[in-house]
Length: 252
Image (cartoon, rainbow, N blue to C red; front, side, top):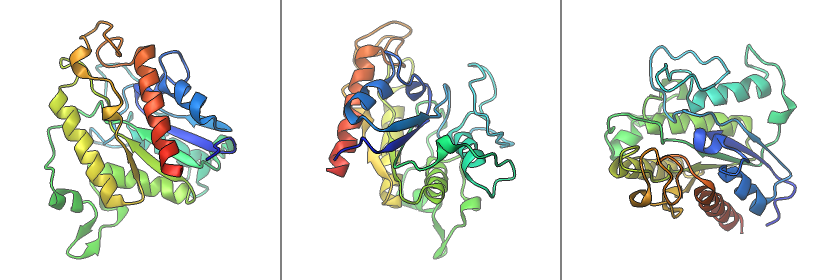
């Protein structure tokens, strides 16, 4: 498939926010996919699920430092930013033509979600979709869970861009001192299961892009990560190549 007439939206955390720098996987992804245009709204420190009450999205997701409140820096605030530029029903609507007409949407987040392991079984995931045989309204899902947040993200994006294809990328492996292997594996498996439940959301298993935590060092440059968490140029190339191949394989 030729992507030269396609427009791509990227959402996520710092690994995606590195964008088209030497250490940004989006750079190497775009070199392969060669889209007509793209927008990257990823923010350093962003979490996939909501993290603190009260939740008051301001449409201005920014990194506020390592030790500050995360309630604004979540993917759903990136969605709110989109809404304010795209959705005429938003009371803060101010049209941004950059937000029109995405063909492909890629969400790469979850690395920063330091929640206690939410119950991981079909019943727990289904609790964010149905209750007593009825579909739970979107505004009542629990976005403090992966299942609830992912459903909310997916359905909002599907409403804004009904003809787009939506992809969720699992977190990459990291140095053990940064992100324990079992916690990343758990989130990856949970994300896959939620994509299966959504059916139309496509899971990209970036966990298996070739970056392996045992070769990485805490706060030092390892094989593919510059500090045990964020990619160096080699790591960015692995992520970009892996995700690009996944996209191409889906559309071929």
